Image (cartoon, rainbow, N blue to C red; front, side, top):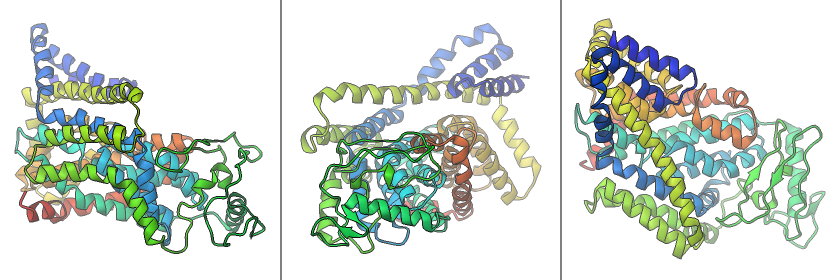
Length: 515
């Protein structure tokens, strides 16, 4: 009876649009009330408080603070500049630039939506300029954002380590390193999909060439100045405000220099395909070269990106060097980011500190509320032996290990359509971890498999938070973005299957490093 009340109330509240945290908390209250009466509700506050008092979870607000500071100091633009200088000249260079920039920023933010928000405003218009449809541009950036919770430092791995510790302990450092190979595999898969996506026809290319000439100061392919024809440096004259095509919504382009050095923030018009009319000349150079950038340019871009690139070095180097714990590394990263923003790049002003801490505090409180409510939900699942019954039921379905693992993956993929990773961990770890351990699956592989599953949920309708963020940046309906996500989702599922059935992909690097 308790399990029926728990899950039925949870599902009803979820489909009524009640936030996940409140749905889990209220359904747990209802189940306890039915199971043991009103008096059994009194210990619930202590259970929720105890779930937040873990020293390990203290790393979460510090990692969030470091990510917020880095985002507000224009680090994303610097990383895009470095990625473009390194790989922008290659075939589908703009797609490869997107993937590489997402890899770099994911190692700072630890969050999928944060990665999409930081990179999308620059890269979605640039992808569209190179012939990708709006929906495919948004889908690529949203998919690249999945790496935010797979690559270290991943908030999802921290939560998994805490929740799974009741069944088998696993260090956060091992999970961090276990996410590297799967993260790179996702990057490769998404790039391969982007390379073979259809682009717009000859008319789009002609429009792009015409607008490139205009942005670079050329008329009919001839320069207005004495520069080389292959010079892609934006022209000096003042740029006119671009006008939207007939029948399209209005588009606005920020004329303020981007904090990272000349990459503008773009709001695209509402037509089906964006052209160079939607972006400023400073953005023309992204992925627009046919040859590799000169080494001095790469060197300058690298120097500009060093403040951001040092963040994962400090975090991972400190952890694996035994200098400090994951929680201490998060605090050090936050202090370092603050010092860099205030005194090195000087793009963070003292008047911005209140906004930084307020933003980080709001984001952290959202996660902590979810953890508190989800911990009560997990307590009910364990206290009333719901997890044990569900585990026995799964094992009784078949003796085929492969089928059981595939079933668990399917359930997680479906859950990811509606739940965030943190809620899903508290809901499914008590059920699935004992089953998978019984099948001799290592705890590291379980953590990576579940995290990648739930990362795919970030782009899966009807929720798909990464996809919502990307669709908002591209100014297209969510349904339009969904149409473009399927190739990337299919590629992600292929990687998921590899991770699930080739344990070395998640265990090899940590074992090699002796973690």
